[in-house]
Length: 267
Image (cartoon, rainbow, N blue to C red; front, side, top):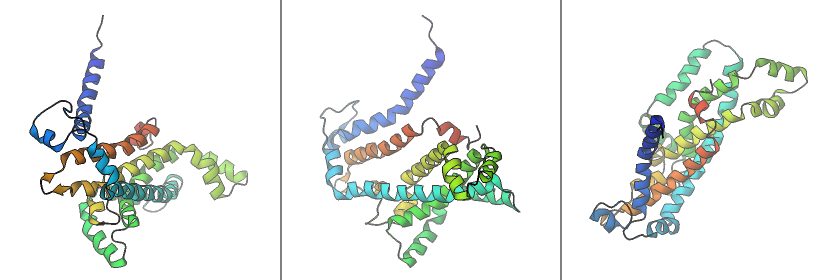
């Protein structure tokens, strides 16, 4: 029987990638004493107390609710703003369009730490500190440029003759854009929503700086879990497992379009 070497390499690579996830799940089913006592490949004393703590303690499950709230808000705002902007870059030529297009992407290149202090001072001054909309708006600084960049690639793949034909048929621009154009780039919108969701979901510094109690994210909650006996490793591991689930669900629904999204819609 001939063994395919490439299949073996791929299998080993996937196994290597799954080790951290398995170890996180393994820790989440252990007590703190067992985690700190030694090395074991599976729980010797299986427990679900860590998950029960998360689902019964408001400081934990509120973190998930807060994160999902501002992540959804950010995704909706980013896509809504990026769609007309990307259409303008795709269909029209104006002075400095290429420079402006590149400048948008440079905002995504900047580290979040650069904007943490200005955002904190600004939102504290206008009364938006510790609100969901504050984090959602802050994340648009990074998500909108990326969304515009990706959507422009998808839109450029749609022939301009479709726009002209729709105008000849009497379609207004809003009707053409929503009824004809958006369905043509539906996969691109899905990919952009995925990237906006993932960045906003895993981002820590901005969300931690702009929140304290009412809108504190799950990522910020995980960094502040310290008791008198030290870190509660089991609860942290359980929280880590639960934070993977939303991202995994989003990836599942857009899995067929992710490759094109990484290529900025140009494949």
